[in-house]
Image 1 (cartoon, rainbow, N blue to C red):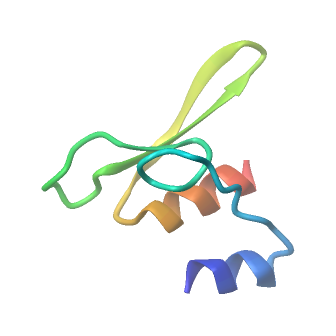
Image 2: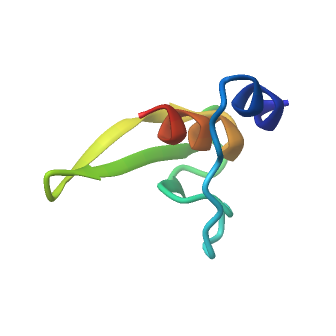
Length: 65
């Protein structure tokens, strides 16, 4: 579903060799409603983008940023 949304917006979800499978996405709170966090680096600083229910949703946020 989210990959279809990314394609509709002309975005690419960046694949990474980590537990979530997506660049900038980490699993921080397993068992909670929104366990996936999205983060990117801007100007050498880590910028928190938010918590999400799925890794794909977090990856879409990273792609949009």
